[in-house]
Amino acid sequence: MIQLKAGQNIPLAGDVVRFSAKAEGALDVSALVVAENLKVFSEQDFVFYNQPTAAGVALAGEEVTITLAEVRGDAKAVLLVVSADPAVPARAQGLGTVTASLVENGTVAAEFTVTPSAGEAALICLEVYRRGLDWRLRAVGQGYSGGLGVLLTAHGVEVEDEPADPSAQTGSPAQAGTVPQPTATAQPGPGVHTMAGPMASEARSASASPMEVGHGLERLWMIFEDAARSAAALVSARDYAAKRLDHELSAAVSDPATRNTPAADAARRAAQQRNDELVAIAETNHRRDSEQLVRELADADLMLPPSLASWDSPVWDKPITPSDGIRLGELYADDRGALRVPYCVPVPLNRPLWIDTESSRAVAPVVAALLARLLTSTPGRRTVVDIIDLTGAFSAFTGLLAPVLNAPPITDHSGISARLEELARAAEMAELAMSSGMGSAPSEHRVLIAADFPHGYQSSDAQRIGSLIVRGDLIGLSTVIIGSDESESDNATVAMLSQSCRHLPTMGQTPLFDPWTGSPWQLDLDMLPTEAAQLARYLRTH
Image (cartoon, rainbow, N blue to C red; front, side):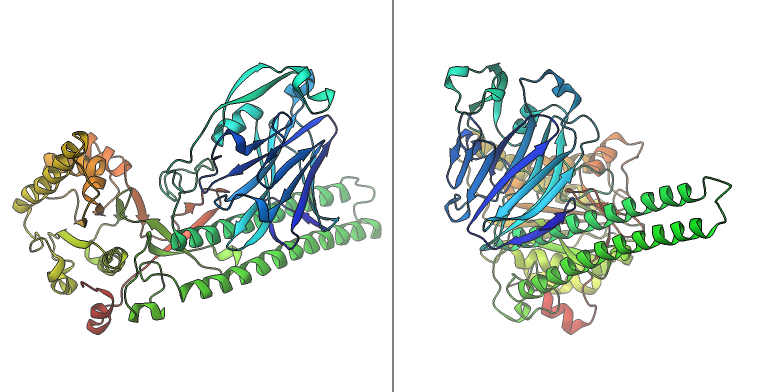
């Protein structure tokens, strides 16, 4: 049996698994069958005592049984939940320590013990989730101080508090009382894997929902999620070991009479040994997880479309295949080993990218890499590129883009307004067509590269770019802005524009935080090789 730490995951080999939990007080167990965005498909996907079955999931007494082959094929995961018994007044004090167990092939395969620290009255203990054709188990431990109703609402179940009819209950008498009742169907929404995008350097949050995506982007985000949770388990174990060691060393020297005795020395050595053993186990588990993810990434790199693959992948020499995302770079953490995870976002860009830099020329290889991936992401649609390059920073590769340029790159500030007005007008016309019922999906993929912002741009130009952020998806627009971070600008329009973008730091030691555990990562942005032959290889325009 494995004792799981928060974020740790293991493979499942059995066909049927059973979940149960115990605590000092009475618990209710339930389950949610969720889609890619971690929301239920409908109210029928909430399994509890008044609705004890869903496809492949059944509640009997205090145990949830999952027949993996029978779980609906479009489900991402089954979330296994405990909540305080609503009939017990002491529920306001929270759940206390909960030990969750998963039985596989008739024996307990894993246990996960968690003690909510803020009086949480509902808890996602474990997650049984798909990885390709296989199933895995993850220790989650996410608590909700607002109780089961808040947990359900967060996962797409609309609930209302109403007295339950004891005569209609199929569970035990302890389940009587006021309980959340599902009231309406909640369809999966187009949430994003982000804290304002997949990740943001401005703030951390773990409340974002994953995006519904196709195979390529989804697979890389699944690997990233596993890497994030494994990293969180390592960090948590290290922190716990350090705190325990500090406590034990303090205890060993607390009595002046025995501080310098052989017994105190032995206690210190034993405490250090326990610390080292715990850290070694955590690092071994993390290294094992990382090695598995490295293998998965290597396998995936041979099959991913070019826009998501590494520069060394053989797919760059094959016919272009469409993609649902582009790769921006690699995420890593020096204190957590050599694993480097691709950082990817959906395409067309659902949120503009802002490359933080004082010099457009310094990030020219980054912009070239972005263009290479954007150009290969939608081979079934014509790509049209507009470039504002006041300093001529991108002249080394703009000549190669001639077949897809809407017009020559703008190198003088006097030409900015007209070009942006053209794009803004196209988006407004598309909006009018959509509102009149005559709209259709964009036939082109438009790309706007706006360098040297905001220098040389008029206030009206910033407003037009802001308008394109709102309406750009109607013309299939992906926007990339290059300039210093203007989130604190005195110009309200420029500040709001900056705050609306997904910022890509180019300076070291600017962390990004993953949306599942809030762990910090460093980002190495992709850079396109500058040799002419390499530029021609990657900057495909047909």
